[in-house]
Amino acid sequence: MTMNVLVVGGGGREHAIVRALASDSRNVIFSVMAKRNPGIAGIAREVLIEKETNVPAVVRFALTRGVEYAVIGPEAPLETGIVDALEDNAVGCMGPSRAAARLETDKAFCREMMNREGVAGCPKYRVFHDPELAAGFILDSEEEFAIKPIGLTGGKGVKIMGEHLDREEAGRYVRQLGGEVVIEERLIGEEFTLQAFTDGKTLVPMPLVQDHKRAFEGDQGPNTGGMGSYSMEDHSLPFVSENDREKALEIMYAAVHSMARLGQPYKGVIYGQFMNTARGPMVIEFNARFGDPEAMNVLSILESDFSEIVAGIAECTLSSRKVEFSRKATVCKYIVPSGYPETPNPGEPFSVHDYGNARLYYANVEEREGMLYTQTSRTMAFVGIADTLSEAETIAEHAAGSVKGPVRHRKDIGTADLLARRCAHMKEIR
Ligand code: AMP
Ligand code: GLY
Image 1: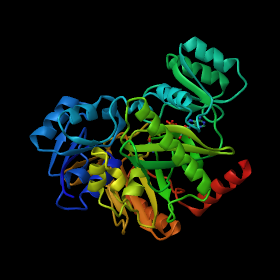
Image 2: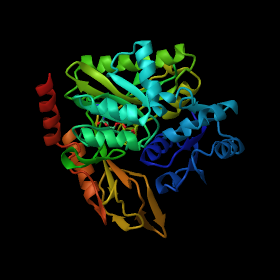
Image 3: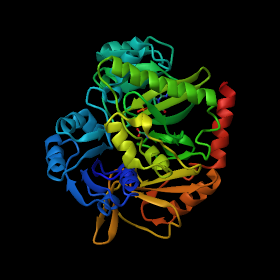
Image 4: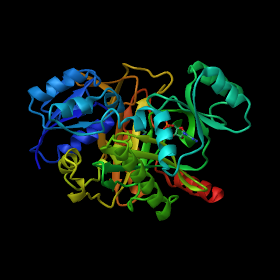
C-alpha cells in the first residue's frame, strides 16, 4: 500500500526505516530529525529539522503535510507522548502511547509490572528512591548487581558490578545517581535481541540479532549505544536453542498482553533484550522501539511491504499481514569517532571510499559542501548481507575499512572467532 508517512528520528535506525519505506517509490516520506542525516534527507520529500521531542511542532508538520502514518524511531519522543498527540489528530502510529512506552522509559515500572503480572524471565530486583538505602543495600550484600538508573540514559547509564564497578564504587555510583535506581541480580550468560511487530494482540517476531554494547574488541571498554550487530541466515543464533527462542517470544507475548489488561495497550515494535542464562532467557530490558543497530539488520532483509506492516500496527490488523524476511545473514558495523563514547572528537573530516556492495546507513554525521564530518555520537554503519555470516562479515569489514579519517569500528563483530567464544561460554554455563 502507499502512504504519506512521517519518520521521527535521524539515526542509522531511522535511515533504515526510511529506506524500507522507500522500497515502494509511491510512498511519500517526511522526516523530523534534530540534525540533518544526509541519507534520510536524500530520500524524504521534506525534512523538518527540529527536536524530536517538540511534540506540537511535529504534529503541526504532520498535519500540514497530510501525513497519514508516523513511525517513531527513538524512545525520547515516545516518552514525551508523541504517539498520543499524533493519534489525537488522526495520524496512525507505529509506536506505543506514553503510558505503554513506560515498559522502556521507566525501569521500575517494567520490573514491577513483570513481577505483579507474573511475566516470566524477571530477575530478582529492588527499586530504590533513596541514595543511602540503595548504597547500604549494596554494601551490606555479598552478591553482585546490575545498577540501573530508573529513567532513560541512552543505553549508557547501566553499570555492572564485577565488570565496571567494585562494591565501593557501586555504592558511590548509586549515591551519585541520587538513589533513583533499580538494583538487580547480575545475570550471567549470552545476550540476544528479539524484536517483534505488535498491534497489541498479535506479535510477529523478527530474526534474532546480537548487538555489541562495549566500545572495543573482545567486549572491552565502556558501554556504548551499540557498536554493531549480526544475524544469521536461519534467523536464529547458535547459542540460542529453539526452546529458548520460544520462551523469549512467550515472555514478550505475556508483557504485551499484560499491558492490554492494565488498560495500556502496547503497539509498535517491542524489543526484548535477553540474557540467555543457565535457567533460560531472562529479560535484561524491554525497549519500546527498534534497536539501533538491530533495525539495520532486520530491515535490510525484510521482504514484505513495510508500509503494510506500519498500517497493520496502526490499525490493529497486523494478524492478517504476512511478514517475511529473506534467509540471509547480516553483519552491521558502526563507524564511530575515535574517542567515542567518552571523548568523541566532533567536527573532524573523514571520507568514504569503495564500500563494495555493503549498505551504508548514515547516523550522527554532518555533511557540508560535499564533505563529511564526525559528530559526538555514532557516525555511520555498513551492513553486509550474504548467504553466510562469514561472507556478510567480509562485506561489512571491507566497507568499514574503506573509511579514512579519525574514526574506528569493531573488527570482531560477526567473526567466526567471536561466535565460537559465545558458543563456548554458553556451553560452559549450561
Ligand atoms: P541496558 O541499558 O539495560 O540495555 O543495559 C546495558 C547492558 O548492561 C546490557 O546490554 C547488559 O550487558 C548489561 N546488563 C543489564 N542488566 C543486566 C543484568 N541484570 N545482569 C547482567 N548484565 C546486565
Ligand atoms: N541496541 C540497543 C538499543 O537500541 O537500545
